Amino acid sequence: MGLDDCLEDASVTSGMQRSPVRLSVSQEAMGPYLTRLLVQHRTAEPDVPIQLSEVSLAEQLLGLQRGTYDLGISLSEINTDGLDSLPLWQDNLDVLLPAQYPLAKYSSIPLSAFHDHPVVAWDPGDSWEMHEHVGTLFRESSIAPRIKAYAPSFPYLIFAVASGLGIGLAGCSWISPAQHSGVVAKPLCRCGEKSRLITYLLTPKKPWRAEVRGFVRLALDTGMTAGLV
Image (cartoon, rainbow, N blue to C red; front, top):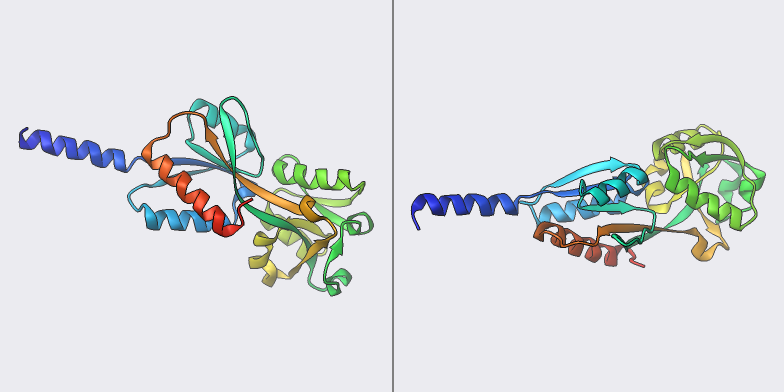
């Protein structure tokens, strides 16, 4: 084999090693645990870039089906003929309150508070996964919330709650970094598993490239340390 052939083979190998992992993430799955996973991946696999796309659940499922994305991260458990869901980490839904709100003096908040106090709910269009999860929790507990505003995103939820428009629900790991913004978090009392928020890795049922396999392995390891189900 000549020098040119060797250089060509090396170039091809290098190109294969640097093939990106095309990762689709639903807006509601963008949180501290994902940040930690991406930092760990950059440290463990510095030659494998992550091509990150924030998408809706519908766009995510279509993209995974068509091969636009290699993997997905979502709050929805999706198991079909072509797709598996692997639980990564779990979070707890906490009650988000204005810092000076009367309920802030209690150590935990019952779900019934959302029947008695104004509520900032998750927008069904822009934040469907959180809207559906929280809505299911309300329906199963026969709670009719007094909705005063809809939040299309977590920053908007923080803004609305801090402004006194109402109380809300969000993942504990999301709220913790935001408690300097005029809001406080309190756990839900007597909700048990109903208040769990699980993040899933969506994986197509087809052979994975080495880069994708490496990311999946690291994601599951990270999930183990973050409270894997």
